[in-house]
Image 1 (cartoon, helix red, strand yellow):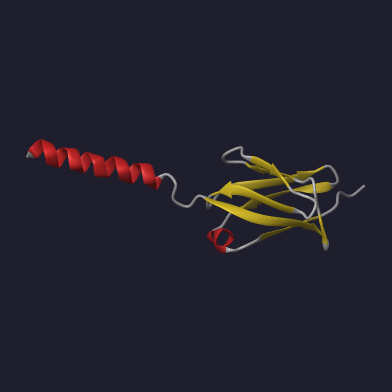
Image 2 (spheres, helix red, strand yellow):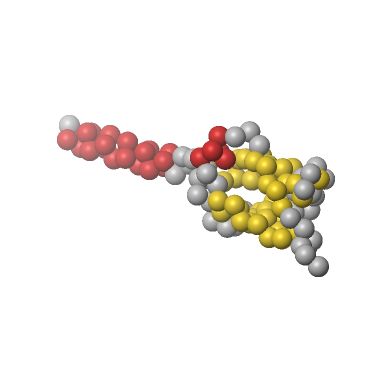
Length: 104
């Protein structure tokens, strides 16, 4: 009987740890603008996980993040930008990123 209870407790503990790892992870959608124009070809890297993606012709992108992750946005003609993901970002339908052109 004691072995059975120990087995059940161990199973519940391992299950909690396994499922607890995925809490807060979400694929978010975003769009990048420079002034009022959408920007394609922007590299987006999750600094915490090293997952990367690139914005499409409409400036749209999607990337997997969790709260506290830092996204780095970079492009040849734009100033680099870092953005820490908040709970509000995870709750929103679309993350809007405004970048600025590099000064020549």
